[in-house]
Structures are given as C-alpha cells and as structure tokens.
Amino acid sequence: MIKYHQLAKYLGVLCLSVVLTADLVSPSAVAQTRIKSSVGKAVTFSCQDNETTIKLKNGPKVVNGLTTIYIGYQQVSSINQNPILIRFDNGRRRWCRTDYETTLDDGTGYGLYWDGGKNMYGVFSSTGTQNGNDFRRFATQGWLTSYGSGGGAKVAVLTRIDPGNGNITRASFLSARKPSDGKTNSLVVTGLSWNGKALTVNAQSWWSPRRRDRSSMTCSGSSPFQYTVVFSGDLKRVNSASAVNCR
Image (tube, rainbow, N blue to C red):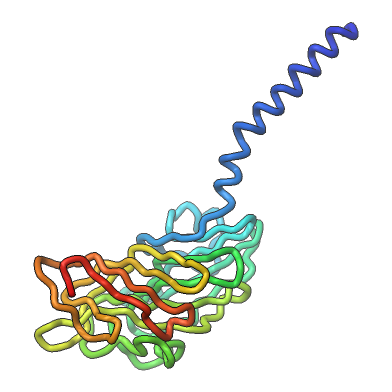
C-alpha cells in the first residue's frame, strides 16, 4: 500500500517529469511545424506515392502545421522529366498536380516559398521551348514571358501558386543572356524570401545576368555570378536587380 506522503511525493515527481519532457519536446515539435522556404536538389516521385515515401527523398518542401507541400519531378520516359507538386494534410493527399508542363522539355520543380496563407511561390526549371503545354501559358503577363532563343541551358520559371488547389495563377521566366549572340543562358535559383509585398530571388547566373529592363549586365571575372532580383508579388515587374561583379 502506498501511504499518503509517498503518494504525494510520487505524484510530484511524475508531474515534474511531465513538465521537463514537455520542455524538451515542445521546441523541437514547434520548429518542425513551420518551414516557409526550401530550395534544393529536385527529387522524383509520383502522385501514387504516400507522404512517408516522398519525405524520405529529402527534397524541397514547405510545412505549415499539419500541411506539407512537396515539389519535384516525374520521370515520364528515359529522356523526359515533368514537374510535380503535391499537398498532404495530416498525411492524407489533398491534391497532386502533374499538368504544369507536359512537353518534351526537361522540367523539374526545385523550390518553394509559403507564408502559410495565400502567398505561395514555386520554382521550376526549363531547358527550352517545345510544342504543347508549358509554362508560357501562365507567363503571358510575366516579366519574361518565355524561355527565349536557343535551348539546352537550364533556366528558372517563377510561379505564384494557389495553395488550396495547386493552380498556377502567375509566372515569369528568369534567365541569363549570352553576350556573344543574345541567346538564353543558364540561371539557377538558390533562395526565396517574401516581405509581404515583394519576392526576393537569389540565384546563380552565368554570362550575363539581366538588368531590371531585361538587358544584359556587364560583368568581370568568371561565372556564375551571385544574382539578386526583387519581383513584384504578381511577377509582372522587377523592382531591382543586382549581381556581384556586374553592373
């Protein structure tokens, strides 16, 4: 039999243990419920994969509470990749989108920003223009409306996305230009941030980064150049553009 003073002591230790455990677990748990921005290596998955399978890929994702959105690509053939975006709510798939780009262009998704509300942006790659449905249909009012001339160089496509259903509502291409012939050159996004009004894009740009008016910068040294572009929230305008060792 447990006497009263022993029971009180036991309950006191138990309560202290619960408090200490909560103190140890709570910060970590809270930290895991919010990831606003994620840019990294594109990974492959499908709409049929469960969340555990996709999570183990360690690809770019954004998290808000019990909602996680993953971006990547599908390997649709031995020579073709198409972008994919999927949302899970508490482990259950809410929607999955594979219709953004379905041409022979090698498109992937490799970056997301989400403030947990209505402001969500995605970064996709493009290696050229092919016949069929591609990102140009979303970028008709964008700062850059197409891949441009040439092909093979990997450029970025910035998109504004409705987190409720995955619809792309706005888009703009973001690319560099070769100084020799003006053809499209490579650009890779490395970071995204949002201040409530404008989207700041950090990137690596090869010769040559674009100015605010879309013309080519004059640079010194070797590429890639660290490039920063600030877009309006609707992706129609660039508020500023700068690059290290470029003007």
